[in-house]
Image 1 (tube, rainbow, N blue to C red):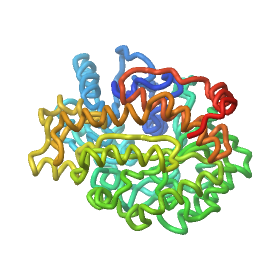
Image 2 (image 1 turned 180 degrees about the vertical axis):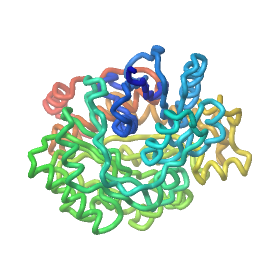
Image 3 (image 1 turned 135 degrees about the vertical axis):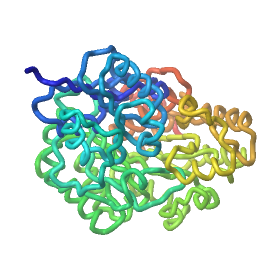
Length: 462
C-alpha cells in the first residue's frame, strides 16, 4: 500500500502580493513545516504557499489549510475545491480559532489554538475513519519542538523564519495574540533554537516572536544567551525581529543582538500621544513614556541597528490632524522604517467586540466581508471623521510617508544614525515594500548600494 498524501496550504493574500519580489518579500509558512514534522513518516507531504507559487489542484487524501482573517475566504474556496473531489479538509490558524463555528461550515474539521498538540490525534482519527469536526490545541511548553520540515519549502525563499517564544502578557485592545497564544510568555531552550538555526540555509532570518526579549530580566538574559550562542557557534545570519520598547533597557541585549547579525527591530509604537495609547491599552508604552521614544531609537542606533516603527491610524480619539501629526512624528522622530496601518477590529480582539456592540462595523456580511479586514481599509465608523474622509486622509498620509525622495533621505539618515549600510538597506527596502502594499502596485527599489553612494556624493541631508 502506497503512502497517503497530505497537502498543506497557505492561501494567497492579495493585499501583500506587491512586495519587492516574491522571493524576497515573502517568508515561508513556518506553521505548516512544523505540522509536517509532526506527521507520521508513512505520509507523503507537500507544502503549497500560494503567495509564492501558483495553486493547482493536486490529488490528496488529506488537506490542511492555515489562514488569517485577510485570506480566510481563499482558504474556504480552496477547501471547497477539495471537498468537491471528496478530499477531507482541515482548517486551522488564528481566524478559525476565533470563529470555529464559521470555519466548520467550510471544512470537515477545524483545529483551534496551537495545532501541535492536536495533530497526532487528528491523524490517528483520520486513519481510523473517526475524524472529529473540532480539535482544540493546548498551550504546551516549548520543549522538544520538532525541527520544521524546511526541506518541503521552495529553496528560492530569500528569507527564512524561526520562532523562539510564544505568548504575550500584554492585552492591547487591537491584538488577539494573548487570546491565541496565551498570556504566559513561553520560551524554547536556547540550545534547541541554535540547533535549528544551524539547519537554515538562508542568510536572512526573521525571528517571528512577538517580543524576542520578553518582559522580565530573566527573559532578557535568555535573549542575550541566544545571541551569544549564535556568535559562539559561528552562525552568520543577518536578521530582524519584533520587540517592545524595553528592548533598549539593557544595552547588553542590543550589543549582542548586533554582534550576532541583528539589522532591524520592529517596535509597536502605535501612537506618539498618550490619549491614543490609553485607548489602545498600550500599557508598556505608557509606562515607559512617550518622551522616551527618541531615546530608545538613539540607543538602538548606537549599536548599528535600524528601527521599524509600527503605527496605527483610526483610533476613536484620532482627529484628522492627529493622523498628520503621527506621520510627521514618524518622519522626524528617528525611526528608520515606517509601518503605517489602519486599526482593524479582528475577531477575538477587544476592539472587535466593542465595535460590534456599538454597531460601528461597516462590513458585516461574513464570511465574504472578511476580505476588507486587511489593515489597508477602514472597516469601522470612526468617531471624528466619516469613513470617506478618513480614507482620503490616509491616502494622503501614505503619499507623504512613502514618496521616493523622502525614502531616499531616510535611508541616508539611517546610514548616519546607525553607521551600518546593512541596517540602512533593510530599512529602505522595508519602506519600499510598505509603499507597494499600501498602494497596491509594485515599485522596484533602487539598488541600495548605488543609492547610498549617490546620496553620499550629492551631500543630501534629511
